Amino acid sequence: MKTIFSFLLGLLVATAAAAQDPAAGTIRIDHAASHSMVPGAKVGDGYLVITNTGSEPDKLVAASSDRARTVQLHQMSMDNGIMTMRELRGGLAIPAGQTVTLAPNYHLMFQDVSKPFKQGETIRAVLSFERAGKIAVDFAVGRIAGPLDDVGGAGGGMDHGAMDHGGMEMPGMEGMDMSGPPPEEAIPATLKTMFERPDKPLTILPVVVRNDWAIAGWQQDGRGGRALLKKGHHGWSIVLCSGDGIREATALEKAGLSTEDAGALAADLAEAEAGLDPKVLATFASFEGTVMMAGEAGGVGQGGHEGHGQ
Amino acid sequence: MSARTLAMSGFAASAIFVGALIALVVSLYLSEPRTGPFDTQFSLVDDRGNDVDQSIFRGHPALVYFGYTHCPEACPTTLYEVADWLATLGDQGRALKAYFFSIDPERDTRELMHDYVTAFSSRITGITGRPEEMRKVSNGWFIHAEKLPSEDGNYHMNHTVSLLLIGADGRLKGLIPYGADRDEALAKIRDVLLRGGV
Image 1 (cartoon, each protein chain N blue to C red):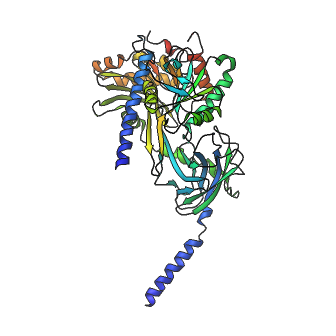
Image 2 (spheres, each protein chain N blue to C red):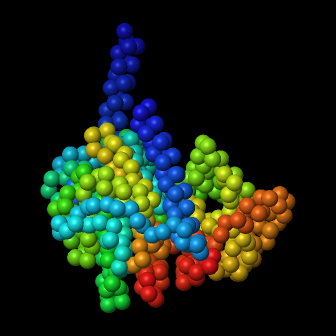
Image 3 (cartoon, one colour):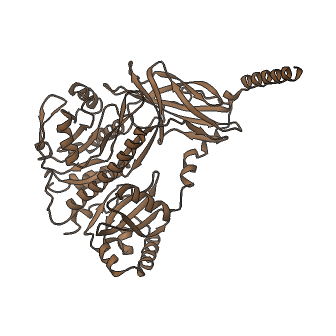
């Protein structure tokens, strides 16, 4: 009996201790900001920077606001020009000692807003964390689009002020990108996800990589070519598709590579392709002209590519 | 279960569309103009109530974007940038048209589109209409647009967020990817749309 009592007492003490634990103090919110809503729009957005100053991992699990019927946490991803947005149902992990910035990969979305957000006002929302519990956050409303750097500073959010802002430099999201598979695996995986179909298998061979640039040979359904890829914020993306047009260092330089990278990549490619069946090389060569896919490569082929293949 | 299956099929569909987009760009860039310009017939309405058909892609170079007004980020950001580009190009870009096609015409009424686009620039024309007509246009340009239902009965759209640069001859001249650098976007517009007799 005594044992049970002390057990219950112990449980009670433990519960009380947990309730008093200032876990909320371990989560800091900065730069909470929203865009003002475009006339006619029914949804508002919310961005913020969350820092877990504690020693235990936490998780943002839900959000609500009087200004919206629901507030969802969204994750965005880009697949070569197509933006996919998913509700993050499992919550967003905020690892101990880390800072997670919700833009650009994540955002809060205020759904069915009856009174549109106006520039200059603040929008109160309550964020629920697994450990830290509920935290009220005021989102400062800025322009209708574009950067929100000029709002959401001192006035927005719950800036506890006392913390060392050096913690802001910790690249929460970037760190996750770095831990991905090596490019020799990531590139074929990316290309296959995008282009492979059950009835049309895609062969990616070879893949040569130099810093943030790569060339991948591809064959599918009797056709083939070479793709030049560049590593950006959203992983590897195709800069251009070509046949023999990007085998030479000079062509790669024109596409934006440094002289050194261009030379090295061309040499690596020649070496990697030396052992290939001549039929495969002929397939690569069969891709006519050069097709620009993205504009991120900095002045890539400006003015030149339209005339290709003539 | 069903949501997962849907997401998977959407994924597969997007892959097909990207492939198709590349195929389109390939065919347009190759020497032989064997794939003609956009030639699908359709009937829609602009935000001021004017009828819109396939002739909208002829006679002027145009910045063409497919989006929707419930779009949380990509669409307002893009229209904001388009407004900036038009203002920056000034006289040089006078001939340029800017079209915002709704991929969510069920919710995007003409009035809503009007309020929405004019918040960014009076030079942006919003276009909506019957969903089946809109699909002709989006399919014609190989634009991927897919509903993604959410648990609360609402839906989002997964969609192509690249902006199309279409010449006065009705042909695709290039793409500006979402998030492109301002100077690069302007250079590309000048380069492929505003230089020499397009």
